[in-house]
Length: 190
Image 1 (cartoon, rainbow, N blue to C red):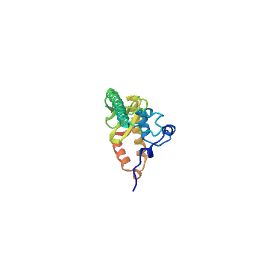
Image 2 (image 1 turned 90 degrees about the horizontal axis):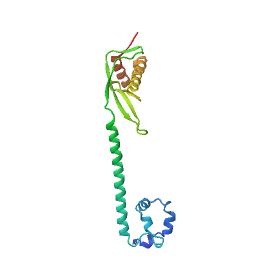
Image 3 (image 1 turned 135 degrees about the vertical axis):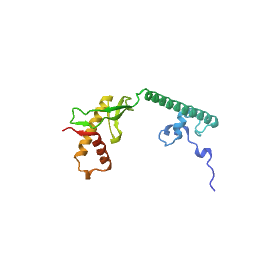
Image 4 (image 1 turned 120 degrees about the vertical axis):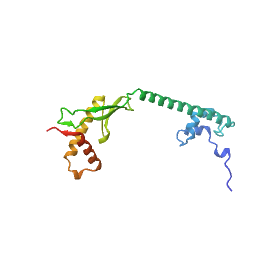
C-alpha cells in the first residue's frame, strides 16, 4: 500500500526554492510571484515553503488573481471600445462609377460600379482604401479613394488583356468567368 506524502516529503527549503524558482518549469511560480506570495514566505521558514497558515495566503492570492483578471479584462474591453470608435469614424463604403479608361485604348461598354471602402492597417493605424469589382473578383488598394480606383482600373485592364490573349482551353473556371464578365463591360478601341 502506498502512503500519502507528508508535508516534510514535499517541502522545499525556501533558500533552494528562491535560488532555483526561475529554472523550474512550474506554472504556479508566476502565479505565486504575481500574487505576492513569494515575498510572504520568509527565509525563516526553511522547513518548507508552505506557510503554517496557508489558507489566508491562498485567499489573498485568489483575491489578487481575481483583481489581475478583472484589470486585464477591463484593459481588453477598453482597447476594443477604442477600436470600435476608430472604425465608427471611418467613412462608409461608396459606389464609384467607371465611365472611362482614358488614356488607355479601352472603353467601358456601359457604366459599371465598383465598391470603395476604407481599411485600417493594424500596425500603424493608417487608413487605406480598397476598391473592389465584385463580379470579376478583382480588387486593388490605394492611399486615397482616387488611387484605389485608378489601381483597380489598371488591374481590370491587365486581367482583361491577359485573359483575352490566352487560349480558351487553358483557362480554368474562375478565369473563364472573369473573362466573360470583363468582355461584357470592356472593349478595345481600335
